[in-house]
Length: 458
Ligand SMILES: Cc1cc2nc3c(=O)[nH]c(=O)nc-3n(C[C@H](O)[C@H](O)[C@H](O)COP(=O)(O)OP(=O)(O)OC[C@H]3O[C@@H](n4cnc5c(N)ncnc54)[C@H](O)[C@@H]3O)c2cc1C
Image 1 (cartoon, helix red, strand yellow):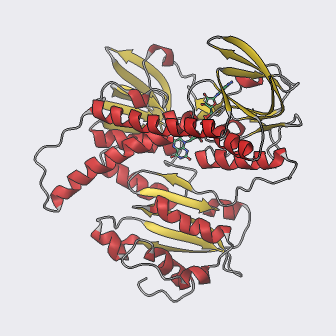
Image 2: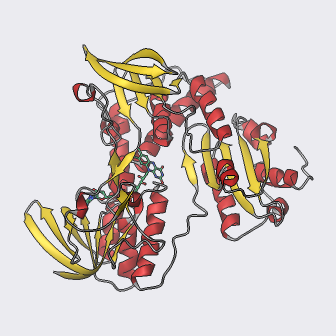
């Protein structure tokens, strides 16, 4: 069977690319080994955000008792939580299926393996089938890394592939890795009542983000009762009467942590088996692409987690759209300058553009201003006064170079800054813009005015 375009992988990279390609008249085949929606919908963004909403509600109920709202007893049904998560996933997956049908995209349920002649062999339940196309997009995503640590095979552990279908809430859990996924899951389990430990190799959690964000989040997680071991390397696992013994080196000293459950959250590796015997080049274990997202084989593109970089769903989708534009020979470069990065803990962390570290490494001149939510009326009414907004601007033209925020709803607020950056807006324009009162967004206006030396409340 011959197509204009074959897409391998139906995650947010692949399915979005498929719809755009079909809408410009391409005859598209999409091969998906498991479920439409990929990691994001089935085992990532959506299940984790569903559970984080539970965490927020549980914490909200606890907070309410300090405000005089007494709820005598709070009971959580794990079954109902999992059922709700499943129904949300099903609803969204049906939505993707509907869009596939509407756009007449032919779906092959099976595992695809690529050949250099732009044909793909699909292993399906019913047997093997070979299809071919003029152009191909590889969007096979990634899977959790399972480290080769002594004893790992002897214990039962979770990854994000299994944790969202857990049968019971563990009394205690160690989350190995204090990156975005690690801190989000640690936050969920602490709210569900588990005793949580985060074990992090680095000297701080969420080490890719601004240091102030790490500090405020660490403080909030500790307040929730989470133990955080930094500069700590896991050296061995052992199962002892269903208790997991974790041997670590913390700042050079041996330590043992005993828990009921272990969640590995140390990173993700690309799904490369799709490459079969093809000669597509790799770079640092990911598929190498040029700025147009074309691989070393002309007419074969790659997008999403499988090419590395920022492993985010919206990045995968944006890359999908860029790759489709380039199928027509448009030579559209993928633009990574305004990518929001969000962590959905409490407080939430959101950033976009350059971090201070990158600005310094690049030798770029900048001015920075930070305002705390503690002077913001809306934040105080919400009991969410812990947090800040920090802006980096070009000292000559006032262009916004980056932002980081910590606090309630900042994962929505960050899009204001993304808009300014996309439209090359300046700090003067942000300072002039009237924000509603009372709102958390007033903090952005205040930060901008402070940068210009005319702040009112700061
Ligand atoms: C717990 C967790 C929380 C996350 N939260 C967020 C978040 O809040 N926001 C965010 O932006 N990102 C989040 N992410 C990251 C996000 O899920 C990924 O960046 C995104 O799913 C990558 O999209 P993709 O299309 O590249 O790959 P994937 O979503 O991984 O999809 C790839 C698909 O390809 C299929 N496949 C693989 N090999 C083959 C083959 N040979 N043949 C056929 N099919 C194949 C797989 O079955 C899969 O369905 C989270 C991830 C995790 C694990």
